[in-house]
Length: 216
Image (cartoon, rainbow, N blue to C red; front, top):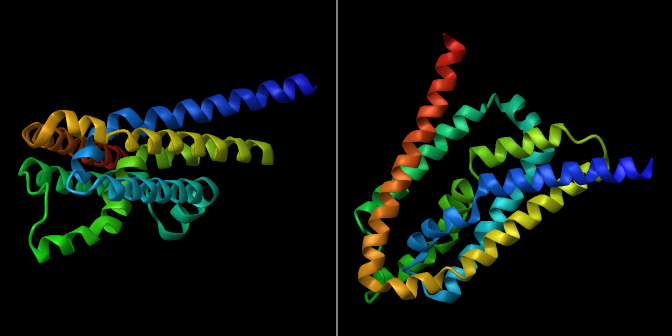
């Protein structure tokens, strides 16, 4: 009996961990984080990473525990999250493509712009870059498969481990920025902006396609 209990919980934990790690994709989103935060000094980038991961963690926990209820009460659909995420991605990608983010600040106004680290940590880094529609949907589905308090605890552990990996990888991202240099970062910024805009369009297409299927 104990063997079956351990085996079932281990299978559930591995399912949660692999699903979340794949959907969040820490290595894949790190270049986007680097480009969005390269105008900040290292200490502020670490703070942004921490706040972004914290925002993502709170979001995933809320939807893991109350997601279905929230969706029902407010009439929200996963497709709405996909379209919303696409719009935010597209706006951020457009700014990156136009290289509007400066590397240094020399004027008082530019210094004041550094205060937006809280905003960028919450959105778009926390939501939807780290916690996108896919991750939110996943925790809701995984939560619905939980059959005991132990399962819920394992889901929380899987969320924690995934986001810890994101934070550690984000912290090491500045080494890549140093190797690329200012010119390299400008080129890298435009490339990632283009990729981010393509991802954004794909998000919107998926959301609209799902809605149209239901209507038709």
